[in-house]
Image (cartoon, rainbow over all chains, first blue to last red; front, side, top):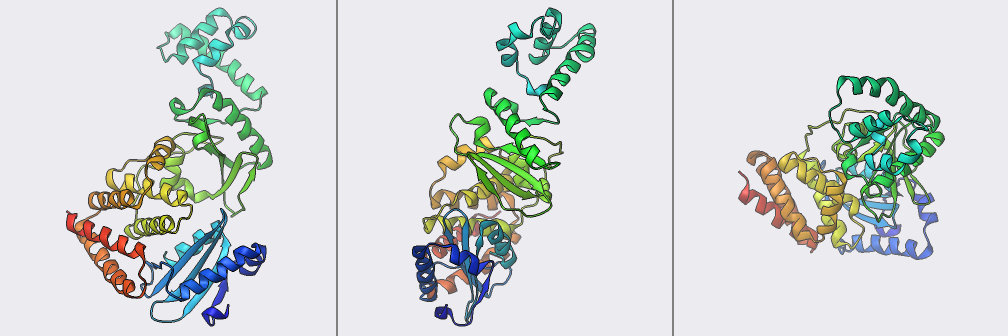
Amino acid sequence: MEILGSVSFEGHFNKCFDGLKETQQEELINWVRNCRDHKISPIQSKKDRKIIGFVKKFGSNLRTILTKEKEGYFLELFLDKHKYYESEMSKLGF
Amino acid sequence: MENLITLDMVNKSEDVLRKRIFTNLQLNILKKRLQKKELDSNEKTYYYKYIKPKLEAMFYFFDINEININGREDILDNRISEAVNILNKIKRKHKNKKIMISGSFLFNRDYNDIDVFIFTKYNKEDYKTGKIHVNFIPENAINSLFFSSLSKISISNFNYSRQNEFNIGLNDFIQNYELLINSILNNEDYQKELRDFLVNAEYASGEIILNTKQLYKLRKKVKNTKVISSTLVTALVLGYKKNTLNSALKKYIADYRKLLKQYNSPNLKEYIQTYEKVMNLAM
């Protein structure tokens, strides 16, 4: 994910990414690119007002969250099943 | 346990029950009790000494025990025995677990899934077998507004006291709203966010805990962001103090206005408009 610079991968990222169909993998990469290019709607953390996030659902079970400092770098790219997504979302204040 | 039986069920099987299991007198007393008519002291003795023990023996024989039914007036008659069978099957697989069946299967002729909830200390993967969707929920969720709503029309293998008072944090409620709007605008599935939002909104505005049937009907009606935003405005104005709203929403509006300069996103515009309406109407 060179698109984002030095982002950390969270959740069971590799396992879930490998489990995606090739078209879904491309969809995720394009989505990340669109986040970088300000084409995706952000949400703001309620715990840390300096942090914004972008969320996307893949099918009924997989969810991804990309977090970014408002005036800075991308921080984390999370990909996992919806249960882990929910606890990650509440941890991040989204 | 006798709440597993309805008058209809007794009427349908009257020929089999009469004389083979109950005497005429016992059957008439059972019917009278199911009609919620008052029993005289003689009938009460018959009921507790002969009828109830027979029913309990029948339930024990069919491995039906510790069944707790809530909102039976909303549950379709034929779904009770089906639900009890499912509960018993799941119970054999997940021994000593608190299990609850809820959702549209209990009150709607047409349904997609049969929702089974297992309350457990450890996080486990949900699974689907046929139409049965097994959801593992943390045990502490029993004290939540979600559980109080879910359990209003439900069949479970455990007893509980349902909590009726909740404190819905303003930030949590707003987060829930923002994610819902975001999912709708992104054309993603938003049913879970909508369910949480409607339950929160009804409770925040009037301390009403929706049951799953009321929630099901509302979810069918609420389909656009304008209705959702208006619902949030009403719930916030009625449910929170002006000072609390103003201090929180002022910050959010300022943040979103700044963000809007970088991201021309429809969700941010919707949030700003909604929060401004709330601040104008806050009492």
